[in-house]
Length: 272
Image 1 (cartoon, rainbow, N blue to C red):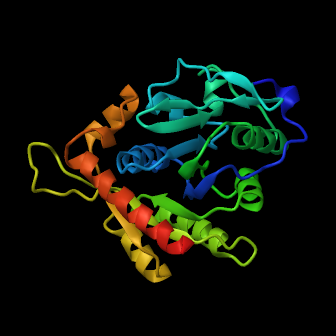
Image 2: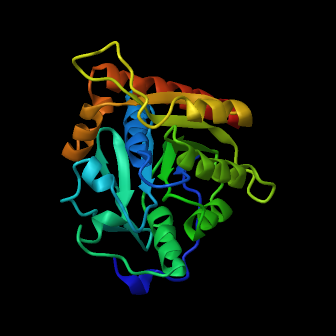
């Protein structure tokens, strides 16, 4: 991407029925893993799905989808240059990571980063989608404010681990979305890394990061707990290999398919 092109860009809403943000209060909770596998699982339900990687400073979608060596095509549509998203696993993917090398840091101020996101959203030929997931960076900074202000979100999903330090930041994120100035419905919480079960001891659960912290927070905030996802080595390995676990016909893949069904039902109910 050419930095000089990140100016005078405005958001517009393409033919997308629902736009759902996947957010987290802090980094390292597996938000992108949830976003990628949720996108794949929704596509398996026959939906037209796209995912926009809004983590400008730490894009991970190309690696997790095995598309890091692919550069999107650009073609002229009605006199304007449009970016063609990468399609794999039934999902349309877009990330700033497709335009920079893996070792290249993006030393951009907030305005430059938000303008880059405007280009990723506005100048991508998404086509007709049932849902566009937006994988937000951690926290509640400039990028969040820009997206929330300029894009009509159908809802947000908050990902957390059970530990107290993560939950404190999650609560801030929930209140940001639900505040009068933002007013974006929170579809529910996802508790990631809820427990660890060794393969050789399938009936044992070890609560490494605390027990049911996100469940308790969801109950206190009167929000649905959409899923409790265990620590599973194959989920990490699948992400590193660029082959999301939701593609697999196993217990871990089924967990994300159940999550997708709940999410789809939640945003349909909100949109009614």
